[in-house]
Each structure stands twice: as structure tokens, then as C-alpha cells.
Length: 403
Image (cartoon, rainbow, N blue to C red; front, side, top):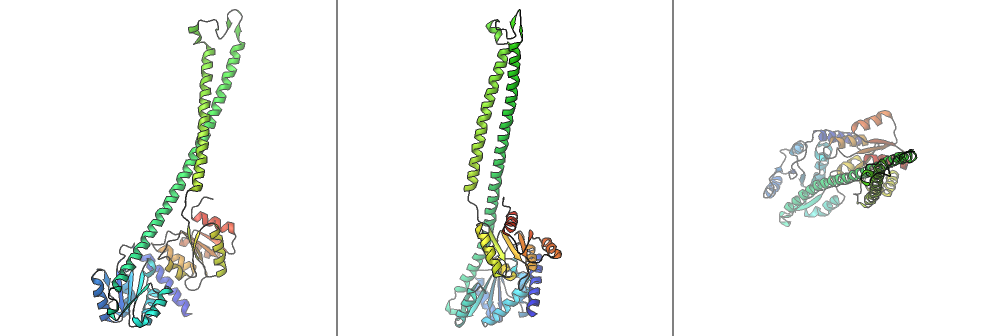
């Protein structure tokens, strides 16, 4: 019960913080938390040489509140032992409303006897990096270098996100251009057909008219065509006028046929170009705690050439979204900790992630559950067990991929 209550508190804190979060501007604010005022001051003085935006909480019981106001992206935990640092970081993760609303790095300061333990915690991603800080003479420049590295990685995360969005926009523009070109070529082909129809109609009228002239002769004066007229007058005779029209129609037909061949060749070239054009592989995040469902989705998605990441809980998904921006999220509802609905609510309330489409996948088909998911901003809902055709069609629709 206690775990469930904590998960609900975390879910509410995440959503409330995301809804109140402003667009991120500063990426180099450093938050220094410690149970020793003297240690915090030493760390602050060391960092002040190269960093100007440093925040130190005024009291131990105000760490969460002051962190939420700080807009910090780098957290430095300088506690007497690692266990204390873990407790403070756990409280921050559970109670903070802004911690998960943007990319951040958490750095752990430790003594040389705790280095192995700190390494193990960073290896499992509990912390992002550690600095052997005690004794201070052990490596006095490591602290500065680690903070620089953390800020660089955060900036690279933002830049990567912008590049991914730009690349996605280029792919979409190219696809739209190809579709427009094909439509224009198809329209040109239709025009050529219409020209041919008109030419055939005119030629038929000419043929009938010439036939009439050939059969309508006056017994005393000869033909309507005035074949006995003077050469200069023949140019104005009906037969010669009609003959010139016929030759003109033949020229129009020739041009229309040539244009039709040109349009067909370009349509074929456009299709071949679109088939060869490189496309960015779409990146899909699957949030699912059931191993069988994960393996099933992995097989389906990789068969269609998607890149796939997995998170087994809402918390893990939120942490992962600090470092990457997938093109689509497939979200289960029933998961340990934060539910899929709460995770979706956070994602859609957070300016960093709100534009990522989400497809809910669940075994529950209650109408109120489906409506809640759609109202939160989910693109669609897929009921378990699902078939391949249904889910792949909805994925393509969410990614705006033409079938």
C-alpha cells in the first residue's frame, strides 16, 4: 500500500510540475545539495570560478521546494555518505514537480573508499556520474570537468532533438513534394488524353465535312472545291482550308502524344526516386511491463524497420524521455508504479514531450478508460490481444505514413 501511495504522489507531482513548467532557457544552472554547510560552500567556491548560476538550498527541509524554483539542470549531491545522498535524491524524484520536465544530470560526490559503490550505482543509471571528492587533493579538477561534461551532454540532447525534428520535417516535405509532383504528372496525363479526344472529335468532323464536299457537286460548275479555279484562288477554297486544319490537328496530336510520353517517363522516374530516397527510421518507445507483449511488439516493429526502445514502467519511460524524443509511444495502462494513464498525462502536460503521439494498448475496453485516454491526448486506442494489421495501420496513421 505504501508503494502505491508513493507512486500516486509521484504521478501527481510529475503532472503538476509539467503543467506549470515554462519553456527551458537555462541549461547550466547547478544545484548543490549537502548536509554540511561548509562542504556546500567549498563546492560552490570551486565551481564559481567557471560557473555563475549556482544554487544552494538554505535548509535541508527545503531541498525540493528550492530545487523546483531553481530551474537547475545539474544536481550535485555532496553528502557524508552515499546512503544519505540516495535518500535525498529519492525524495527529490518522488516530490519534485519539475525534475522530470526536462533533461538533467545528477552527479554524486563521494570519498575514495566509496568509489566502487558509486561506480555500481552509476552503471545501473541510478546516478549519471560520480566524483571522488574526498580527500580534495585526490583530483581537484575532476569536479569542474564533470560539471562541464554534464552541461555539454544536456546541450547535445537538446541539439539532437532539434536535428531529429528537422530531419523528420525534411522527410515529410520530401514526401509531400513527391506526392505533389506525381499528382501534377497525373493531371498532365489527363490533359493529354483530353487533347487527344478533342483532336479526334475535330478530325472526325473534318472527315465528314470533306466527304460532304466531295459528294456535293453542281452539274454545270463542277466541284465545291473549285478545282478549276486559279492557283491563287485555290488557297481560299474550302477544301484547302479544311486540309490545313487537318494538318494542324495532326500536329496537335503529335505534340499531345509526345507530352503524354514525357509525363509517363517522369511519373516512372519520380516513383523510382521515391523508392530510393533515404528515409529516417522512425523511433518508437514501447512502455510495457509484460515480457511476452514486449517481445511480440519488438518482432512486429522490427519487421517494418522501426527502431525500438523499451521501458517497463512509467517512471522508466519518463526518465528515458529526458534523453531522447521518440517519434511515437506505445503505452500500456496497467503497470506497477505510475499507471499508463498518469504517464500519458505527464507526457502531454510537459512542453518537452507533449507533441509525441501516443497509442494506448490495453486489455481493458471500458468506455470511460478509452475516453479518458483520448481526452488526455492519445492518438488512438488498441485493445489486447491485437492483430498485426490493426496495430500497424494505427502506427502508420500516427506517424503520418502513407500506406
